[in-house]
Image 1: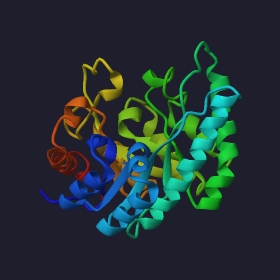
Image 2: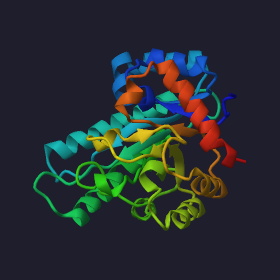
Image 3: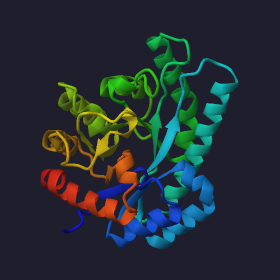
Length: 287
């Protein structure tokens, strides 16, 4: 089965790879783009990761991930802000090393409620404040901060942003080139108003990346690890994919799979199954 030219492999799909292995497996499969994770990039070294990316000639689709902004003011919050400044630098360096069409997009998972807190509005305000603090750094580096709303089941521990509107309302204070949003099918497919929200995101020029994977029940005991290959679950990828296209997004489309069974699969096989699932479930809806 042929590889769609806009397919990108997010390294989470092949989590137990080094940067070198992830690049090789992706390129050997004929895929033209990749998004790497910070832990592996830091293990390899930023300069070496950028050199390898350039050598393999792959586009860079996103850098994963920054965020974790919800702590109250203090040492933990300052450490998170400083870490995000490093993530912005990493994103700019890797995007510059990638093939033409690379995008300097840092995906942000903003964080859940601090321990002992029940104050969702306060946590969301601290996210807004952190984005405002980091926006000048992102602008100077030519990086887009991509706020990612997560499924509501993660609101307590991973993301106090659960809908596109919540992310877009924060992004509205900033230039679209500096702060955008991540549209992820796993997190947004449940929302009855998602198509209108995608249209809004496009109208405001905010779609920084489109990520796809499938939802299937029962969820895993660790609900974080419940993502499936496109086409293996119950998401109808047609409406959301066509809406993202109509909204003007023309960049790479990442498959990001967090699933222990997939991680236990040899990386080349996981990539092959990703290609097949994307071809069946997503590609038919692309222009």
